[in-house]
Image (cartoon, rainbow, N blue to C red; front, side):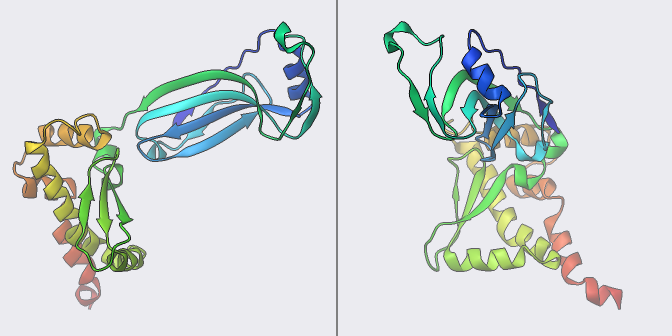
Length: 240
């Protein structure tokens, strides 16, 4: 679990304080992770609220946090003595979720342990490329490697991933060859992807690996996917 404890300090903002006390506004923290596309908004009525707890599996790499004070409902004729004199006593009608104050952006890195980095979900995702009857391909541009499947293959992939006995099939037929291709490509890349989260994670794993070659390294990361595949598929026969 990753904990974030925001501390809000409002300076010369009695009008905003009053709105928060009357439940017409809230302190807001917006958390966004590029590596996993996790996005969530957390609200509080206290400027020193309890810690925001986020499962570590939902964050990877750079995480951005924006801090606001936002309205909770429509507010008519809002004004504050802290307004710049250029406003000349102007009053504003506010909509729900309008921003009353912005405290800027913070960043931190959700680093994973060596064990978490070996989870394939920390490195790869599977998506549809909206083509028909085309072979799979790999997109390196994101913070995770994306295995792109045609519509027919993606539909069948979603069916199989719901059945435990086919987990090994997915690893062996889809993830293993993709991972081998990625590892092979990393040897010859020009540095375009070296700052990507997946590249950083895989580079560390490859450096610490006791085996060499794309096939051996990929199988080691996936913990012998062929064995898992055969074991799961023959479970019923072996039970007899």
